[in-house]
Length: 215
Image 1 (cartoon, rainbow, N blue to C red):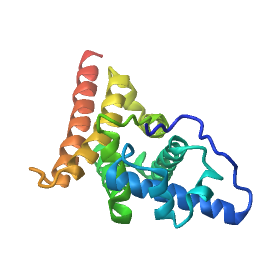
Image 2: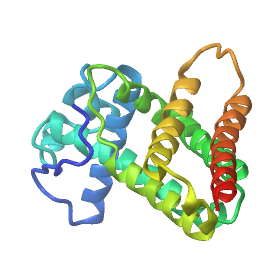
Image 3: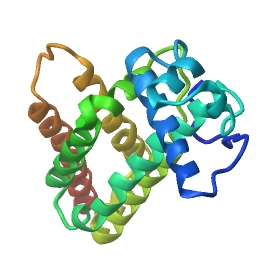
Image 4: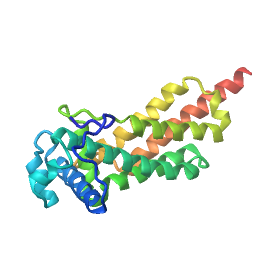
């Protein structure tokens, strides 16, 4: 299981810089192994080999494989949230279509960095043998959505705002990962982002227009 919001069990917490570097190497190695073959097939020996350390050294910091996978999952989530948050001040000042496009393209670039390391991890997160807890990422996206509404108060008159936020958060994440995972997608990424942005913008325009008509 690739659990993100579970407490990470470490045999020994790193205090020295060298120890922290070793832990970082183990976590990075776990991500590489997960990306290559999935969490189920990943072993502590494989992780140790990729990290360039002995298995005994690995167990000085992590009690078992599950603890390593949780740490790798936490790294994925932390880096994703760190990618989203700096975008917020810029996105909230854009119109819906441009904001959606900017967010999805940035997410795509993030997933494709380091030879698609995080993209391959995300692919396994959508597989049946892997449970992925996305609460921190969902919260970051929900905070972005909320701040966008605060900067565009006219949108607060839309009905079903919780449903719209659910579609924006889950639809956007799934769309990017699914499209990038296809060898020969039938449409371009640009077309998908345009349709996604148009859908949200058109929904808002239609609902706001209907609301104004009834006033």
